Length: 279
Image (cartoon, rainbow, N blue to C red; front, side, top):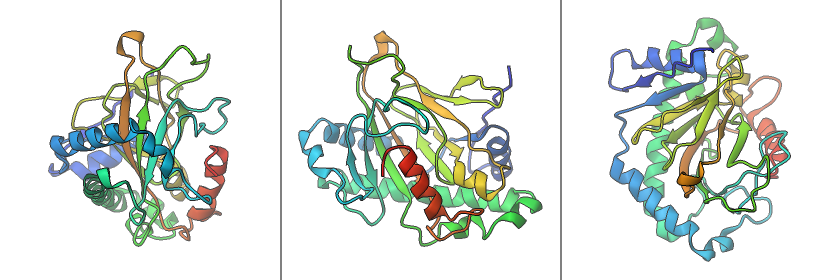
C-alpha cells in the first residue's frame, strides 16, 4: 500500500513552509497544529451552529435567485458523477453576505482568522514552489485572492442516519474540492478519508484542534498538476457512533477573472457548480 504520510506542521517551526509544501505536493494534504484559533472559539462555533440547524427557521434562509449564500437543505448536493445526493445540510458564508444574527459575531471572527491562515499558506506555496511552477502561474497565488469575495466558509451538518438511507448513499461521496486550498477545522466526529495515488483510502487524523489543509482543482489547474487535487470523502458512521457530525471548511478562492489555464476561476467555478447540482 502506498504510504500516506500527511505531515502535522507547527506554523512557528523554522521549516514550517518547506514541510507544508512537501506534504501538500506528496499527498494533497497537510495538517496544522498550534494555530491561532483557540479550542474555545471552535467549540463556540460548533455550539452556535448546532443550535441553528436544530431550528426550523433555517428554511427561511434558503438562497434566492441563484445566489450561493444561505441555507442548503438535506440532500442538496451531489459529488461530481455521483448518482446520489450527499447526506448533509449546510450553510454558505461569504465575507460580504449576511448571516443569521445568532451566529454572526462568532462566524465573522472565525472566517477572518481562517482566511488569514489561508493567505499565509499560499505565501508558503509562492515561496517554496519550484521555479518552473511559479513561471506557469498567471500571477502569484497570494495575489490571486486579493480582493476576492468568493472565499466560502461552509458550515456542514451531517445528521444521524435513519432507516431511509439507501444503498450507495453516504455523508459525502468521493470528490475533489473546486478551489485553491481548503482549510478544515477537525470535524466534531471522525469520518474524513483521503485517497492515495493507488486508490487506497486512509483516515485523516481527527485530533481536536487540528486544521486539515488540502489542495483543490484550481490549484492543480494553475500549477499544471504539480499540486494534485486529492479525492476525499466522509463515510457513514458505525451504528454505535450514529450521531450528528459538524465540520467547517473554508474554501479559498481566487477572484473570478484570474486565469487558471484556458479557463478563468469564474468560468471553472460555474462549470463545477452545475456538475454538483448547486446551480
